[in-house]
Amino acid sequence: MTTHMPVAGGFVRLAGYWVDDALGFMAGWNFFFFEALAIPFEITAMTFVSSFWSERVTDPGPTAAICAGCIIVYGLLNMVAVKVYGESEFWLSSGKIILLLMLFSFTFITMVGGNPKGDAYGFRYWSNPGAFAEYLSQGDLGRSQGFLACLYTAAFTIVGPEYISMAAAETKHPSVYVKEAYKTVYYRLCFFFVVGALAVSVVVPYDNPTLRDLWFGTGTGNGSAAGSPYVLAMSILGINVLPHIVNALILTSIFSAGNTYCFCACRVLHGLALEGRAPQILARTTKSGTPIYAFGVVLCFACLSFLQVSSGTATVLSWMTSLITGGGQINYIVMAVTFLRYHKACNVQGIDRKTRPYYGCLQPYSTWLAIGMQIFICLSLGYTSFRPWDVGSFFASYTMQMLMPVLFIAWKLYHKTRMVAAAGVDLVWERPFIDAYEAAETEIPTGFWAEMASLIGFRKDKQSSLEALTPSGT
Image (tube, rainbow, N blue to C red):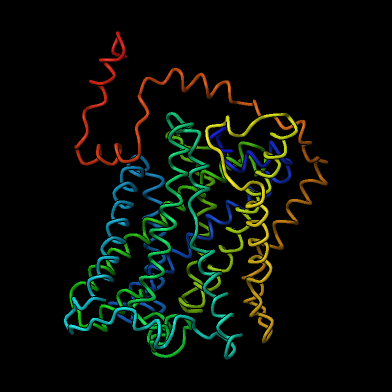
């Protein structure tokens, strides 16, 4: 959908224009809450990881200082130094990739015996204690519940496609570059996420006392000791300096993520105000174009990180993870529902999707499967809060799932919106302007690896190539 119609607002605007304006309203606010709640999560995670150097970091005073410091720095970067935001995020993101490659290399080298102990542990932990941990119950039921716990965590971490959608309208040659960006999603999911999960299962056993303390938030350190399984594994193997380097890189990655969420949440809220879906005061900007009031609201969400001062980092991380997971799944449900309307509109209007810039296979069946899995996660996310009953856990797990339908129904009833019929879905919309823009763009589209080569200086200057192709050199 995005390669065919790369409009400003991404999947949020497509949902409102192709399905129902009420769905667009709900999707916009859900995406805002998803972004805004991720900010206190990242700040809390910074405290969690910082405790590797000193357990005193989790004391009320230092914890409050970290929260205040992060909020102030985020405010300065987004209000004063916004011009350097893109450049800083580029280098910080590059650091994340280097960190991941370093950790994958560490896993392989140490598992074959390249560690101070000379222990070639290989896949030892897959058989002892095993690949599947028991959780809440014993036996097969416990292992199934352990798998579900991992599934919910995975659902929390899998993000990315929605950001491509939101940035598509500002991309040169969107029919080419956006398509290539979406294709890399498969490789990123398979390589970074799947290999990362496998690596963690290799380097440390799930029954490690410190790891259990991290997850459940009980025992020494209140669940905030060595912040990362990789760092824990390095400590177990007797590696002294590398844990500090890795922990520092993880800390910068967390800071970068929080800064990105601040920027995105502010722009989403500003966009909602411009479309009349949020108070108009939030549409006001400074002379430099920064949405000052919208950013003030975003910083209020960041202040939720102070909850860890009294409740502990592990507890607050659990709350935020549940809220964000619910919002993330709703994002994907909105995308899937919008695609089903787009798919049906193409069939009804006699449009062959194979003529579009990107064509997805196994449709619409894979979309229905995705909706089923996402609904299952949304409904079962907080099942543990029922045994025994836990009010806090229940609302953390189901607040987003309860709030979003209320917003959808309220907007629909108040504005009397109707679902767009398949025959009435405007599949032309802004496409003529997009085609004209791409035709006028003189820069030749390049592939992913060519762009990567240009970043490190192994590519011929673009301007000289263009001058050879265009008489005027413009």
